[in-house]
Length: 211
Image (cartoon, rainbow, N blue to C red; front, side, top):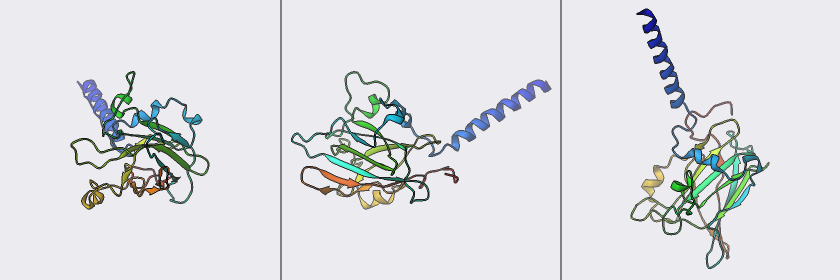
């Protein structure tokens, strides 16, 4: 009887420890963040600049987004940080290729991976996405971060300051994970340009203080 009680106690403690570890995961729950590991190029071979599959100048005016990723101190550039982005097409749908596999079936084929350079810089070129059809959510670009030594986590989506769906009320509800994701576009003639700097650990739950 005592042996069974001890086994039950050990099992309960094991489950509790697992649950505690899950609760304390950096960034909290993150459905789909594991898609960052589907990069077709090994992380150490990724470039700091990527052109997403939809990017074109053929009758279109693409969007270039660049910035610097900073460490938790807010001033030191962070090299070798992996950034994964994905978004809808210009009709608001996550379009996929016929042979889509893994998370591409959910995230669509308009996605890309990059790795910050020694100056913490990154850049990607794409077309501006549209909001979901029939929904009130602003148009957005999802972004997941994977920094050295930590599991992947999501930060605030890229959104657009001129989007009528981005109301003041919705802006106030943004968590500013990694800093503000609100973009102000500049028309430079053949494309739009904007920037967003990312601050590792900013407003990220359970982020280690030693980073």
